[in-house]
Length: 636
Image 1 (cartoon, rainbow, N blue to C red):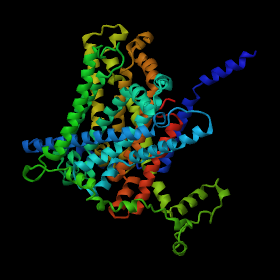
Image 2 (image 1 turned 60 degrees about the vertical axis):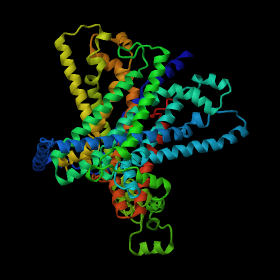
Image 3 (image 1 turned 135 degrees about the vertical axis):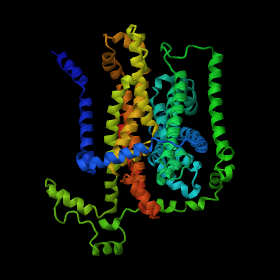
Image 4 (image 1 turned 90 degrees about the vertical axis):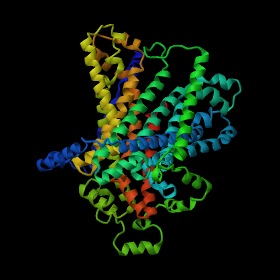
């Protein structure tokens, strides 16, 4: 009888209540997204508007059917592609260096070390290290929270228009992303795996260099490659706000109605994305850790392994040197095909010559909290606001005990609208709503495409099923995989901003166009990492559970084994999509990003700063929730 409570507790812990809680949370978030923001489905529900939307969309599709293929224009597109690639490579190089340094401070395992002694003096001596760790995490939060588009809007004042502005803007944002993930990967390494290094008397730096860093190096390399691909895609569109390259020309041609030229530019963008995908796929195959995997690199001698490492480092340095050379001396972007030195504004900024152009940063550091509207601040200003009837009188009509009345909530919301900060908070519902719904749709689409997208289940299933498929069956499977991978490539190859412009032609400006753009791009990004997770599973695991059906094996073996990684990638994509929602606001969808850009361009820097602070707060809150719920890459 005494064992019954133990058995009952054991079975209770196995009940998947967290799964049900997660589903309930997702449902609540989706309902909240539809309640907090204004959605316009009239383009789908109203027959007259639907016909006009189809006509607009069809005319846009027809306009893309005749690309400009003159030799002069193709040469221009080629130079713009190189410009975009150079900006992305330079941005990634700068970001890796800065992120490595900041991540060492943000990682608790590296900066603070083991818990240490229990005496009070030991804990007091570690307080500065805890403070340094928190400060580094905050810096990374700020860098990551401000989208690259927003960084570009700010930096154009000092660096001017051009690819170097896009490179610096990208590097700041990527630094925040890489620094966060690097620190989490280092914290994920179990202490017992490097306790021998500590036992030999190594300090925190040596423990990191010879213990923690080597154990997480493959994950660090893999994620850096993924962010490099994203940097190339983002560099292709950051020109919309002054970052040069393909994006600047695409925005210019859209404004001029040159749809044939836009089509050619998008083709070059897709080709650049495909090249980046193929290159990173090749490198990932070299880093495959399972020696029994059919596509793993077989064991090599020590000399060949060292040579491969030197070749990899040499190739990376060569790309970086080329990007710097191209930015400074290798392009032909000046008048009459002359070289234009894009690095000159960066050198002037570093020397302090252009620092005076960043004087508006003082105003950006003084956000407008509109304290007078809630009775705070200067007495004369408070009285002036009251006399104008613009002060918030929250409980004048309904008291706090009337919370159960719907009319009370409506009255309170009307009063809060008088407060500028509340309007800023309300504007954040737009990127949040787009991110929640768009990520959910993207995840569902990626899960549906993962099976035909997987190399393991389409072309290499005989490795674990023992079947000998008919040649026609192999051709059908190959076609399925080509279609799935083609859809994924196009979905992620065309950036969200471009998808948004296309869907605005159908739905009109608003949340729906931005949400569909986020969903489509998220599907393309996630289906790739989802299928890579499945393909990296040792095939012997599939062989052990194979019951005669590839689909069953995928659903009951590959899916559950990949589920945790899928959720990690999905949550990280959600955080990225919140920033994307802000970016889409900058280019006209509305919400937080739109109001930030509007106030910034009209020199109302204090109000722009309040919106910027809200953007940062969103990322910080999401990051802390992910750490609390262990949804990030940290496994402990």
